[in-house]
Length: 636
Image (cartoon, rainbow, N blue to C red; front, side, top):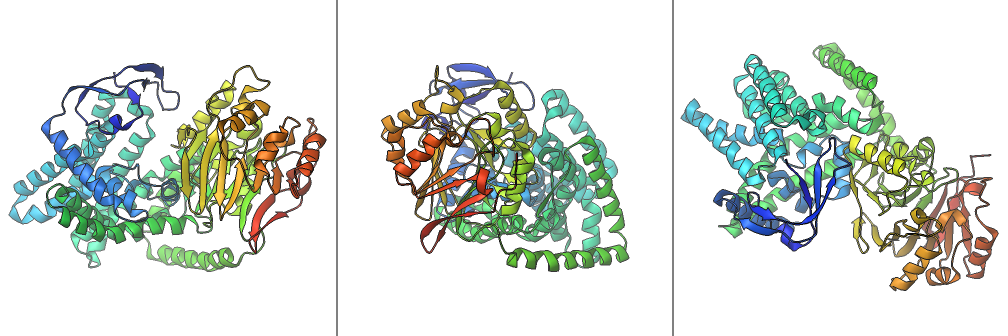
């Protein structure tokens, strides 16, 4: 039985596919994936018992050279090049990943079935003059070489199978042959690995291949009749057909429809094939001709920058994604509408009417997005959402439409409304400081219609029911759940986050989950913001004992303004502004008069409270910290 091994250390980065390893660790069950599966948390570095075969070592040499060349590029291209060519997505930023999901081009960031179809198709087109047999052999060799180069993990093998079938459809134009081939491949793959039946990735791969079989040949023929060369016509329709047919599954996962998905795929389609070709040339020449590889890498960078730029730009368009019910009825409704739209677009009058409506809508929405006044205030750094008795804190990244969210409050509708008012469509990182309902029950509202790169959680897993709900929500939408260690540092836009605690899980305190809250220092435009979750005196003292620099300009008050705060903790932070997420008329007496007195005693000049002021913001005006509020809307 296959198992997933989680290991840390440089030794694991040197593991090569095909090696036989010995490792000791703790056996557990995967609680996040779609089906039960064993996992091993390694306690020791891997011991190599048998070397990888020569072809696997050859592939590793090429991947390493490609990674070295990519590291010399700037911006998003450095992460995109290895992702596009060999499926190594480790260098792709959370922000780009989230924006690509919002714009429907996430399948272009890493190796997929369409990549196999494109690269094998190019080989076949080039060899076609030498005869069909030579072209078929060349396509097969290319397919096998790509599998070895990327690594023979199950997802790559599935992509290779689907890519081969899609290539057959594009070359022959005979769907009668390819549909049975696809059905046979699906049955065989399910027989080999029954867990694929509940894999969203497998469903997406099968649907995308079906789209390439049933839609791409006719669309390609239509383009050819209008003067587009056959090869370019095939390359243009592949990503668009895949986007159209996978939309229902994406809705079922994310609960949102990408309005700009087809447009994004159209815009990037002309550069995908050239970028793939140049990227593969960079990989193949890297170990033996470094100078040529460097030239290919830099030649590929502008094309990769174009893909990333399209994702970043379109993700911030008004209504780039719209909520859609992630229910069977909602998915079936979308399927019906998609079929109807494809049928109607065959008629010229409808195409003209649809194009006119699209232009009219853009002429209204785009100017509104540019000149829309009011909330949020210019130069805002932190917004505390009015969500009742709970926390939902939004940190600006300095990029329109993108923000980091810390906690989601108790009500999905309230946090959703707050994020809408801020125009947040992309959340590269969503932090759940701990699992109490007033910090996590609004998660579905935060995810509604937005792209989320990853969800970060603390070490606590109590209450069990809340952890299970968070895991299900993340798995259903394909969002990674991570537990960042102390010292973990991440930058997105102008915002930098550093995890300060907890360094250990707490046991035997008045509230272990509160003390297990993730504590983060956020830095933006030279200002420091300390995000404290609900930490109580034990966790506050632990931070003081660690010797970490707690000094901050803005303090998110622990535990909604509870009286349980240490004077020496406030003294170490010494903030100019304090922010408290608290509900009007709550039963806890928050914020406590003792806490308010302590803030005044330590010289905190501005105290912002969501119970009295509604959504509140801390921002910079003329290099000075200021507080802004919208006025309370919730009443007891």
